[in-house]
Amino acid sequence: MHQNALAQVYARSLFELAHAQGGRSAIEELNDEFEQVVELTRTMPAFGRFLSSPIIDRGKRQASLERILTGRVTPLMLRFLLVLNTKGRLGELPGIAEAFDHLVQEAFGRVEVDVFTAAPIGPEAQSIIRTGVQHALGREPVLHTYVEPGMIGGIKFRVGDRLVDGSVQTRLRKVKAAMMRSGGWKLREQLDRLMEDSN
Image 1 (cartoon, rainbow, N blue to C red):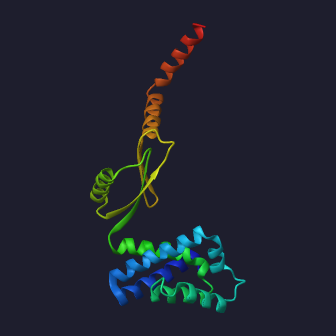
Image 2 (tube, one colour):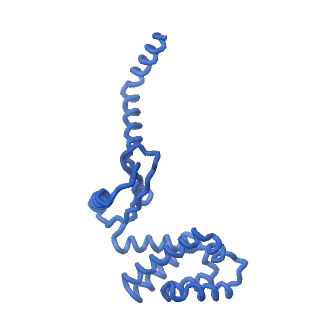
Image 3 (cartoon, helix red, strand yellow):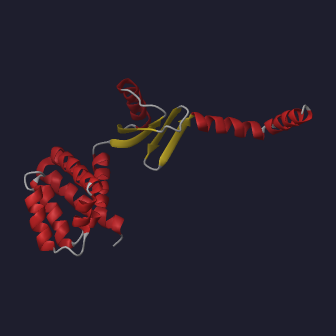
C-alpha cells in the first residue's frame, strides 16, 4: 500500500475512534498532540530516529514510550503510538499527523491559509484577511503568517496547492509583460538607441 494511502487509513481510523469516544473535543485534543509529537521529532532529531529506527527493539521502544508519554498525552494517543510501534509504522507519524489534520480541517469547515507579506502584519490586518478569506472560500481560515524579506510589498496567499500572488513584484512583471506585448519594447529600443547616440 502506498505510504500516503497508509497514512490516510491510520488517520481515518484514529479520527473515527476519537469521534466515537469524545467527539470534537477529543479530535481537537489529538490534533494538538500530533502537532506536539511531530514538532518534538523535528526539534529533537534523536527522538525522531528513536521512533523510526528498525534497529531498536519494539518491546524496549514500547516501554520507553509508556514511561515518557504516560500522563503527557491522552491515553488514546499513547495507545495509537503503541499500535504504530507494534506495526513498525512510527516512522510514518508525520504523514499520519498531516492526514489527520486534513480530516480535522475538512470535518470542522476550516482551511489552512499561508499568508506571505514583506513585513509582519498585526491582529487588525489578520482579522481583515481572515474575514475576506472566509467570505471567498466559505470556510473558517486558519492563518499562518510568514514574512518574506525579499518582497517589495503586497501579499501572497497559499491555500492547499493554489497560490494567489498579489505581490508588487508580480504586478510589476505583469505590467512589463503587457508593455512588451503591446509594443513597449519598441520604445525601449528607441531609448536605448538614443542613449547610445548621445555617447
